[in-house]
Image 1 (tube, one colour):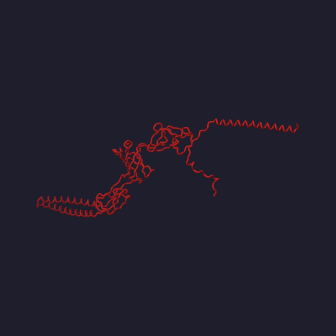
Image 2 (cartoon, one colour):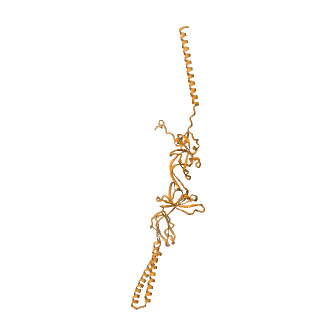
Image 3 (cartoon, helix red, strand yellow):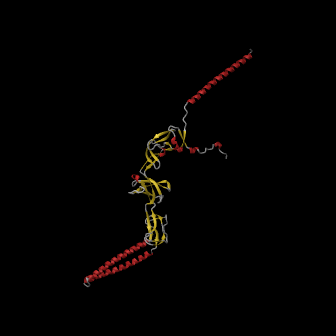
Length: 395
């Protein structure tokens, strides 16, 4: 074997040794990857995280809560006056329109006063005539008394003169009374407002002929409104004079008004078993008007505390509990309730929760305690993503 052949044999041997080393290394690496895959498969899988929409959660808040019987009724003016004609005749003028504000003593209308004026003139003439006759009778009495003292006439002459004076004094008093009545009737022809307020009704116009007693105006005081309502007789224990009433009217759906019970009827309606109550309402703002329907409640008990919707509470009558999110995990929490406002479907929690706790509601109440959850705001997720700066359209 020459030198060239020996060199080729050495190279082949070295190449075979390198291939063998490579195969051994590859086999070792393959065994390590398999072991790692087996280890990962044997490890427990991470629990899945359930996304909860923000609309399926509520937050415990500090708020006012009230209880008490429900009432309903109608707003009515507390102070009102119907102005009627005191004398009959033709309406000469009216000076206040419906809806117009008037002051006490303000002239509202004038009625033809011809008859009343003639009565005053006649009464004045009668008074003057009777007063003159009385003056003459008094002089005659004085003269008769002097004559009796002188023995010129009999005593019966003085007695007759004295009786005439008494009669004429009575006539003068009657004439003066008739004059006073006539002047009052003349004054009644000018109609004035008995109270300050707003004209609610005016059923007559200028030119109408009215009789005594005819309604001319209805005036109401808008600053003082009362709620004429009723309460179920079984809730009468919660109703007392001075108790606060909170109510709403359809014209202001998001506005709550308050008043206080002024009177409570001593009897219940035999048909409905409802007890009438009257609630005084301060209406100096003028926002409320008579005739509006109102519903509300009498405040029996009120306090400030942790409040949540009744809908989030499971078994509120027996073992009340809620589902709370804490540390990204759902947990069942037993709670103790205080005041329960069934009308507004809210309840006070006095034990078990803290201000700001997040609770599950709606379909999320079916989530099993212990589940990992994440609260998401789907409204923001649905919003279109902003265009990247690099992809912004060229101007």
